[in-house]
Image (cartoon, rainbow, N blue to C red):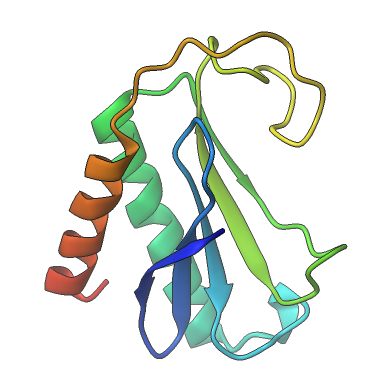
Length: 125
């Protein structure tokens, strides 16, 4: 079950429970497409993506950051952001694709999410 990590008047950030750092950014208003968002909302989304990506890179030094927007099952506009590692269970496949191996990651995700929650509240990103 997803947990809301942070919310402001424009977006909310949810944790996707998984073996890797995986967050989702939803618009508060139920837009279907990015092109329907105002310019200021687009900037808020991009600002949040930038912040989360930098925190993932700084904390975990992943092999790659994946950012995607899919809405086939959930038509509410949202973005996935994941820190990917060569030894995670699915790399180089997408996390909803074919499992390649048993992951060997030892990541303190609870600590990372707590850090993000505190920093987002403090800085009002």
